Image 1 (tube, rainbow, N blue to C red):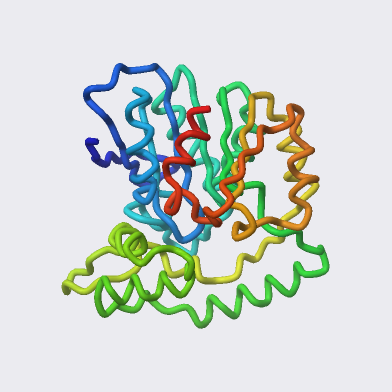
Image 2 (cartoon, rainbow, N blue to C red):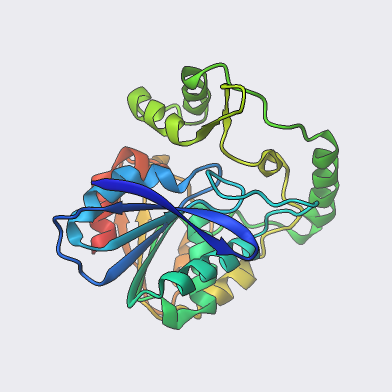
Length: 284
């Protein structure tokens, strides 16, 4: 598998897109766009992409703004779902796919749903890896979240250097204790960058550590789901995955009932733990 990166301009930012290709595969005319989750990177789709390349599809895995090798917002800007949607719309307009399979993990799945609901004619198939939105939030929490966000911004500091790649892997293991250490170490390489002084730091904007000031409106999200006309596949990571309490209601909001696939032991980070199963689900 050949791996390389490209940059494109989207909404005033330089955004990194990881590409994966198999020169021996016959081109299929299908484009697969893989959207990563929160605190992740397009580069960590590599294990899934290795399984997808033989299909002959053109594979794109962008880093969202403020993650990986993509630009960070400046001048007091922040990161909201509509910003991510606009960036993905710019990428899709640039590559102009004849047939698009849009895949989203977790936060990336939420972005994929919002884009597909807004532009239903652009997506021929949607695949969601436990990506049907954040937890429901009561409207009364809005002032609390805004207050917390303002306080977080006051205390925000630049990213601290990591002692080593092993230190990064140790911290990742704390967040993902059920994932094999060897896999975690390879993911740590993708999720860190080298600073000018040779030390490492996380490859995301520190502002992502703040509490979002916006609450998640489930009814509005369901309205986007109701506009989606293409076939949808929903992939569950089993009991160790991440499931909002109203997951069944959200899946019922799609006009076409989704095909549901469960990878029983995969957990939420299924593109790291069971890439072959995820690739089969994507290829349908």
